[in-house]
Length: 208
Image 1: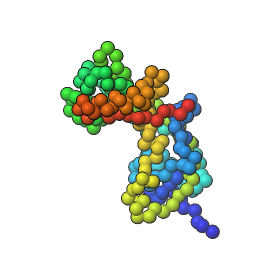
Image 2: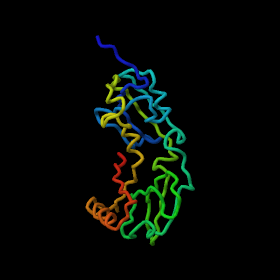
Image 3: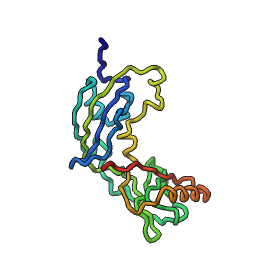
């Protein structure tokens, strides 16, 4: 009979996860096969990691995280309104573009996302899209294994769970968003124009 392993540091843990806001609206959930990560290395929120310690496959629980324990409190100072031309060709500046810095300002490690463009002005925000929001996670441990040497140092199969790794790219649904073809054309034009600092965010949509 195979002995089940519990969750502990340096073990590979596979989870089924559903992330929702406090109204119960599902924001993101793992695929049917679950998501796998290397436990104990700070790849998930500390409170989630602590709640998983010592659990065995088959165990499940629900945990609530306040904003400060998840994606942080909303910072009203993390918003800038700048002339769109400072970011490149104004016709190519659209919501969803992400910049590592704002031209004319010293880099501070934050990433700035364009959230709106109107009358030649672009609104950039460094807040996480889910900042200021309390979240609840429904989690079930599917499997726990010992990694081999390659998995212990990280491979494509051992990554930050998608419910955290992708959530920072979620943007609100917008019926006026450009099509993929339009976005590709804009990106190519931006690259040809030398606007290499601009990065096109291709975000997953919030699950309804």
